[in-house]
Length: 233
Figure: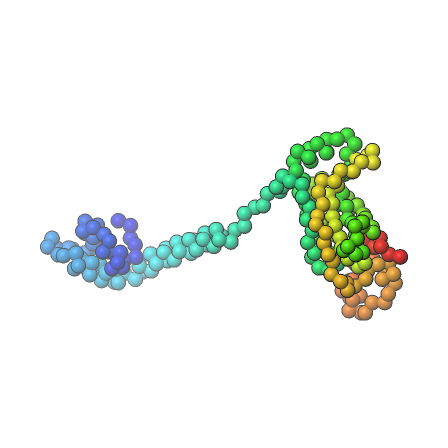
């Protein structure tokens, strides 16, 4: 019988035959007429007299408990992998902070195949529409941001003048055709946001802002993503 850590509760679960086999393993001579209670007492006493062997079995038990705990932790904390696509035409936008907006979208597989197989297909774009007032029915400015076919998200820098912004997922074609696949809900932007535009590049920055690299970041945004400042006057 495999040597295990002996406890009274464990021994009481064994049959009389198993108790006798265990006693033989420990070298205990058990008389035929000895009751189970005395056999268990003898085994507990023998187990106490073998601390090295018992310590070994305790270490094995501790390792087993650690493995179980680790597996349980992994099962509780593991996050299932999200699918690349939910097979729908949809676009959403969430403000990351007052200046940046996170835009994410999905494209229905059948539409994706039909559009990209069109001989005049050029690209997918995220059409960004700005509104100076939430009650305006028409946008005051628009800009198309080109995205790769496998892209599904994009950060967009918002101009300070815009009070509301809306995003559309659009397919562009060579023959000046555009096909809108989806548009987001209008998103109100926070008021009293800091103005960042072409005139802002000429201001003097406090030393702490210069040290942080903010002026270079603004210049980069203006040079590489001028759509963010298209409402400058």
